[in-house]
Length: 162
Image (cartoon, rainbow, N blue to C red; front, side, top):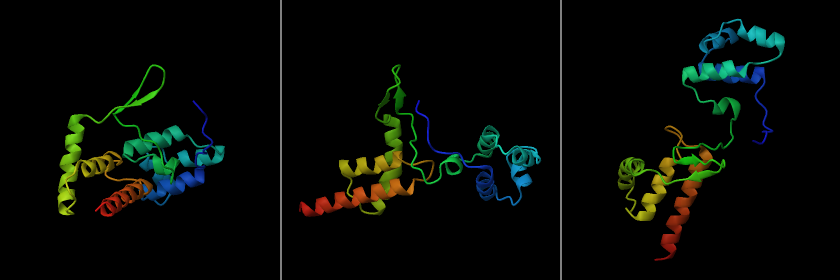
């Protein structure tokens, strides 16, 4: 695996971000929020090192995504269950299952009806693709803008063909 040239946040940056997400105002309170002894921060500060494993464990215990702490504003790849790694370490993509597609359609069709979007195959495909690109209940701004641009281009093409 290739080594990343991205740097992990230093102790001060990490602490500022953790204060934001934990809604704590002191380092010792953040440590307690992470499930660590309050003295942990002073030890890290004195050693000039940060035990990222402990931070990760605490954040996961709190149910907080690691993305914004370690890679803010980075468009990361999120594998989903439709990805399969072969014995040769190649990634193969498979289509979403029928059940997943039906769930996506149940979600997007009311939205399409609300906005009078024609129930065409292309529109269904576009909307379900957007559905599968989500992360939890959200979508990265860049991904959302790409989807909107694609929708506008598709609508323009349909208008031009009339």
